[in-house]
Length: 344
Image 1 (tube, rainbow, N blue to C red):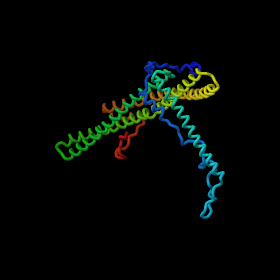
Image 2 (image 1 turned 90 degrees about the vertical axis):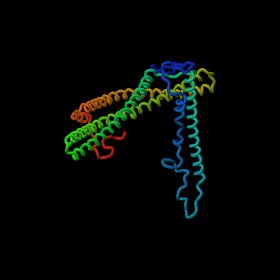
Image 3 (image 1 turned 135 degrees about the vertical axis):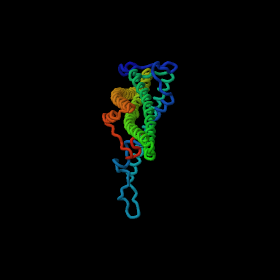
Image 4 (image 1 turned 45 degrees about the vertical axis):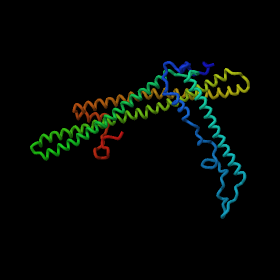
């Protein structure tokens, strides 16, 4: 029976032992977190298909303004009140149906999740896809570390450039007030101003690096992981309704059971299609994410290397050319605060 219910060769049903171990498969953070994820999306009771009055709905059940004459009000027609009551009852029934369906789905998913964790059930696993998902999560954690360090470097270097700027001003002031040391103070003032200028240019490159990594980590990768979460929820629902169908199939075949079996088969097919669609979506997003990551990081790592190397080599011309190569424009100091260090 199970072979007929499973979806193709990409997935397989993994039995779970008594300790809840799935062998080489990575576990999530904990049962409590998974249960919270199951419960997090409650029914939306604000969306119903029945509208009583209002925009786009029927005007029945609304007292027309033409009934207001003088200081008195004419009572509405009984049929209007009846129509309004019927609409209200329809909304209540629809909302009750939404809550009922959500409750049944949540119960089945919670039962399946606990069954998997305590070794009394099985789960569908796409080994290749789940390995790629775990690799993405690990990569995101490492890139977040790089992002944090790059931001720290930006702020520390910003402080250094500010100090060089102040020191250059102090040397310049002293060169004018100390005739016997005017040349020495003047040379040091020029050196600090040059270092400050090169530092501003390097900050522009590092800032661009930080901004690009931030977009990759917190937008591109996060968007893919949101689809992964939807896929994992769909997988749990699929297994829950698969288990329900298998249990009913092994029971007696009376009239009542056959009706329930038909309903279970319909629900199972619906969740199977949803699961397979999201599995395909995740596979596509992972593929494009990997291609985009390589393209972005190739450019950003080249920028970072060339800019840092040129700065510490004292090659001002190469430093400027690096920013021009990557179309990075520095903000004019003093134009707005902060000048050339964007807030992260």
